[in-house]
Amino acid sequence: MDKIIDLEKKYNLFVIEDAAQAIDSYYMNRDGINHPLVSIGHVASFSFHMSKNIILGEVGMFDGNDEKYIERAEIICGKGTNRSFFFRGEIDKYGWVDIGSSFLMSDINAAFLWAQLETFDFIQNDRLLIWNYYSNELKEWSVKNGINLPKIPHYVSNNTHMFYMCTNSNEQRNKIFSHLKKENINSVFRYVSLHKSELYMKIGAIQTSLKKNRFLC
Ligand SMILES: *Cc1c(COP(=O)(O)O)cnc(C)c1O
Image 1: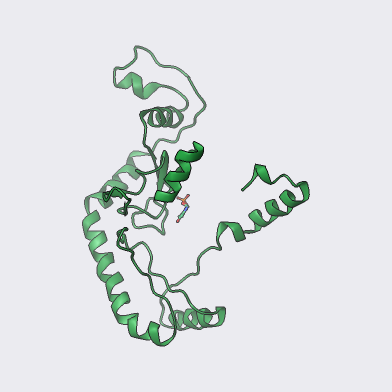
Image 2: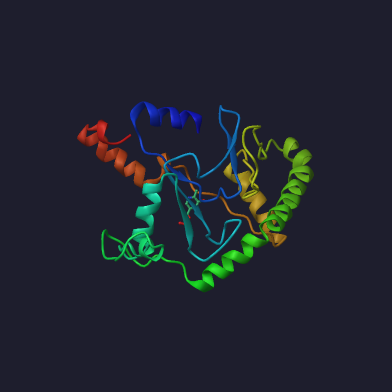
């Protein structure tokens, strides 16, 4: 993140943190302070997709690190109106001021999320116990088989979102998959990196043919 922020400053960029998996994650930058992820870029989001530590259907959370982003988000969420400003008594009438839709969370969803936030420490502690169990119990086996287990650098915290293994080959990966499946343990492999994705390859091909490299990087 230090490097990204340096680039942001140098080229006057806008940083959006995809912190989808990163609830309860901290990053120590060169000031030596632990910064929660979502607090480093201009805007950020958490996901509450069913695969994350805290879940709520397809809901996510927006975070703006400047009043102006939060104000606009409130308007966009409020059908393009400045109604929330009106409810707070900041303006004397409200109306449409921007684009928007009805992105507000329902009461039932809010209650479901609230209960998880109330027990968040419990959720995280439980996950950490399981995560540490995997890490300790698989250590010897992973060394023997040349498999890399997660390493947590000193400058980040572990929110135990994922326990992953890097295998040496697809064959080895598939063997582990079928073994786990036999034991009724669900495991998945993750997406390819963006620069190797089908879309990016297509863009890359168009880019080359147009020889306009300055538009995309
Ligand atoms: C889960 C995830 C997303 C998608 O989150 P949604 O809430 O489904 O939109 C995006 N980025 C990363 C890194 C994720 O892990």
